Image (cartoon, rainbow, N blue to C red):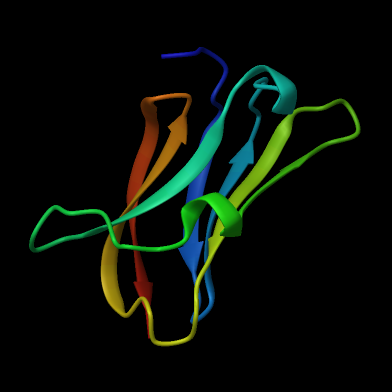
Length: 99
């Protein structure tokens, strides 16, 4: 797994989930980032449009700050697992509740 992930805080609302990164040193152009949401009961990834709806923002120095995935209202409900992926590695995990 790449070093320099930093501290990750997960959150979600009715239309997007976010992995907020603080103190990380990973840069936007050197890796591929995604946020995958997983059903807690089945362990399967939710069938979201990850490729089109993932956003990766960075600081003026190129360091990744938040990674988010958007979805339609009602597409994600309840509590789900969230995985911040860096390349093919789960760099951080947590849970989020969408009400």
